[in-house]
Image 1 (cartoon, rainbow, N blue to C red):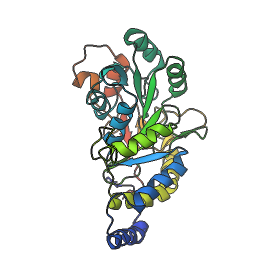
Image 2 (image 1 turned 180 degrees about the horizontal axis):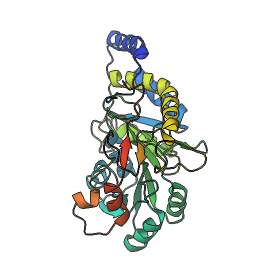
Image 3 (image 1 turned 90 degrees about the horizontal axis):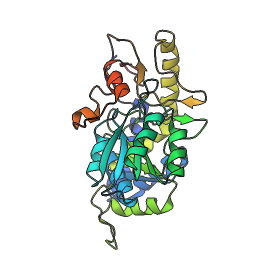
Image 4 (image 1 turned 180 degrees about the vertical axis):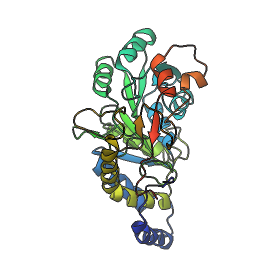
Amino acid sequence: MKFTIGFDKQDIPTLHKYWDDIIKSQQWTEGYFTKLFEDKWSDYNNLPSVAFSGWTGGALAAMKYFGLEGKTVLCPSNTFMATPLAIVNSGAKVQFVDCNKEDLCMSFEDFKLQCEKFKPAGAWIVHIGGHIAFDIEKISDYCSANNIILIEDCAHAHGASWEGKKPGSWGDAGIYSFYATKTISTGEGGILVSKHKELIEFSKQFRNYGKLEYKIPGLNYRMNEFTAAIGVVQVDRLADIISYKNDYASKLDARFPNRVRLKPGMVSGYYKYIVFDPVENSTGKVYDQPCHRIMQHNVELPNTDWIAKHHWCVLIYYKGE
C-alpha cells in the first residue's frame, strides 16, 4: 500500500464542475465556495467556522484575539513544531508539558504541575493521531476554573468525536489543518471553529488585512475559491472516509493488541493507527523529535521522550492501493 490522499476519484467530475463555475464567475477568492465550505464545516462540527489559507492563520488569529502576546502559554512537547511556533510567533512564551503514554496527548497531571509553576494565560492541547485527547475534559474544566484560554490543535482530528462531541468544542477555539496528508485535504488550508462569536468575526477580518476598518492588524490568510471547492467535496465525503478507516482499523485490532485503545464512546478519524511495538511496514512515527528537544528547553518530560522511541504507525489510508 502506497501513500494515498483521502480523495475519492468519483468526486472528480463534481470538483471539475465547481472549478468551471468559479472560472465563469470571475470571483476566484472571497466568494461562494469559501462560504459554502465554512457552512458545511459548521454543520459537521456544530460550531461556527472560518476558513484560512493554512492552519497557521487560524492559530495566529486565536492567539491575537485572546491577547496572549507577552504571556506564558503551555503546549505539549509531543506535537509538530507548528504548535509551539504559532505561540512564539505570536509574541508569547512557550513552556512544555509532558504527554500520557496511553494516548500520546497532553497529561493532565503534568499540566496541573506546569500551571502551578508558570501561571499561564493560555494553553494548547493537541489531539494526536485522529482521536480525542483522553484528558481533554479534565484540562478543559481546569482551564475554565482558572481563567486559562484553551486552544485545541485539531490538525489530526477530522472525523473524531467523544460521546458525539466534536474537536474544538471543549476549548475557546479549535484549529484544523487540511494539509495534503490529512484525513481530508485541500492541499493547503485550515479552518478555525469557536463558540465565541466575537472570535469568528475577528478571524474574518484578521485573514484579510483587517478590512475594511483596519482596526485589526491582520495579513493575508484567505483561502481561494478553488481550494474551498475541494473542501466542499471533501466535507461531503468525510463520513465515508471515516467509516472506511474505522472498518479497516477494526480488522487491524486483532493483529495489534499493544496499541492506542480508545475510551468508551470515542470515535477516531484514524489519521494514524498507533501501536507500541515495532512494525516493519509502517509509516514511521507520528513524531520522533520532541519539540522541547528541538527548541532546547532544559526540562524533563519522560513520557514524551519514551513515546518518541516506542510507537509506530500502521498503514491505514482511505482506499489505498
